[in-house]
Image (cartoon, rainbow, N blue to C red):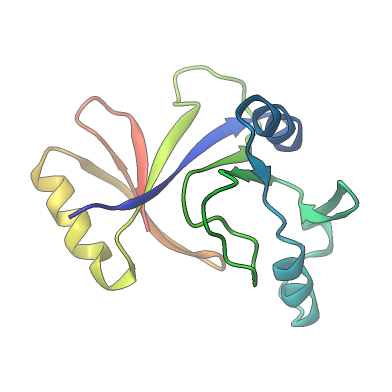
Length: 149
């Protein structure tokens, strides 16, 4: 069994990081403007959660790049293959990981995957139930954070 994943990297300025890495790797910036428009239309989007980036609506605190040969969901702009997601954090690098993996076994397999990973030596840190989704934050045996969605 294999799992889908994306590499999440903490950043002070996600858009600058995405611009750099898209150029460095030859990756494409993800366009989430269709999803943002839908969420705004349904009244589910706080007005201060977006910015203009490259002439379109983008998340204020998130920017992503994906491999140009990998598929993506045209309804939300999210890459379905190799991708990097940059998220704004308030703190500079100290002892917390600057990046972590998100594992995607699927909602129906999430609990079983969390149990399997715990049996392998991972520790559950927190269960999250947010408007953006549900996930479990865990640490590996050395304390490196990752999430199971």
